[in-house]
Every structure is written in C-alpha cells, then in structure tokens.
Image 1 (cartoon, rainbow, N blue to C red):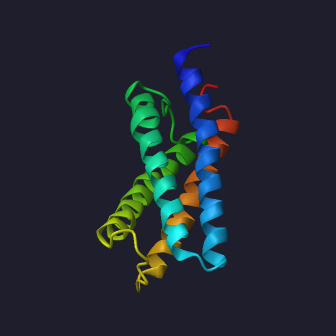
Image 2 (cartoon, rainbow, N blue to C red):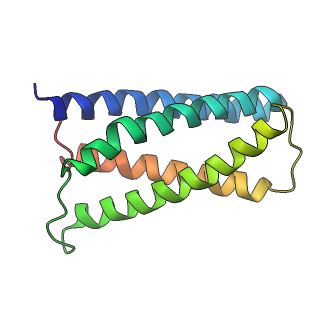
Amino acid sequence: MTDVILMNQLNLVLQFVVAAFLFMAIVVKIKGRPRLHGLLMVMAYVQNLGLTLFIMVPLLLAGLPVVSSYSNMESVVFIVHYLLGVATLILASFLVARFALARFTILNCRGKWLMRMTAFLWSVTLGLGLFLYSSGFFPG
C-alpha cells in the first residue's frame, strides 16, 4: 500500500471522527449545554485543521489530485470542495478564536448566523470530500 493511499484512507477515517464530533456538538447544543457544545466544536476544529495541514495540503502539494480538465465533474467538485474548505476553515478559525478569547465560556453572541453558515459549509465540504473519495478521484 503506497503512502498516498494510506494517507487518504487515514484521512477518510478521521473525517468520520470529525463528523461524529460535529454531530455530538449539535446534540448537546439542542440539549442546552452550550459550553460542552463549544468544547466539542473546538475539538472538531483542531482535528480538522490538523488533517488539512498534515494530510490534505501535503497531498495537494505533491500533485494529488491532478485537475486535468474543468469539464470533468470530479475536477469541478474538487475545486468547489477546496474553495469551500478554505472558507470554512477561515470562519471556524474566527469562531474558535472568539471562544478562546472568552476563556472558553458561553459566547451568547449575535453571530449565530455565522455559526450556522460555518456548520452548513462544513457539512457541504465534508459531503463533497466523501463524494470525491467514493468516486475514485482520490487514490484509496
């Protein structure tokens, strides 16, 4: 098994862990435990940032995947996945920084629309990544 395939499979498994953290964070938010919600979101963010920096970016810099044609559906989906992923990381970084600056206390912020937008983008990006993996766009 090559390193690329191993990295892609590890990334896939750990993305499911990130998704589990996101799901648990939504459940505890609904149950009225906002501090735990924030902590779970920070854990998901840190793991996702690590996956991005240590697996996805090195694979991208190594030339995988190669976008050969913009008429290929997977190539277009990859570009959208990439752009939405960058936007999601920027928004999530802002939210995590606000939470950390508030000493990990409840934000009660007026920016709930920003949290919802970030959660939506994160879900779409994750779904697009799963689509790309299942379509064979990423070796694995």
